Length: 137
Image 1 (cartoon, rainbow, N blue to C red):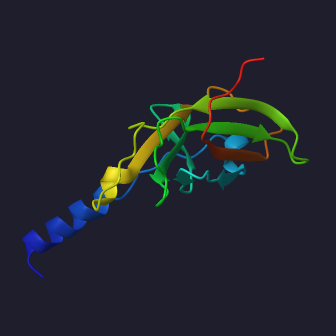
Image 2 (image 1 turned 135 degrees about the vertical axis):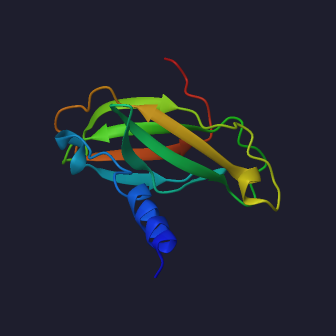
């Protein structure tokens, strides 16, 4: 093997090195649950650390027979081990209107939710697509 090949291999190995930052202790063992709606499928979310901040990050896809996704949003619930809700948040995905199309990107949306502090006792984060607006009561 010549020196140029060795250099390329070492460079490629270095690129894959420290790609991920470890999760904070309170987030490391949290389970993630996803629930689709009639309009949107939720693909496996993940907890990540970016720029020192804990984020819930994920993708949604338009369901095959959905007419629109513009009213759909993501409900995020932080649950303890018994299933009791500790906190809930709402986030949106972009683009809001996941269009029909043959190209995979046409019907895919992305969401990110900042989690400045994980509620104490969180065992599971439930990520649920919700097709209708919330009614303030």
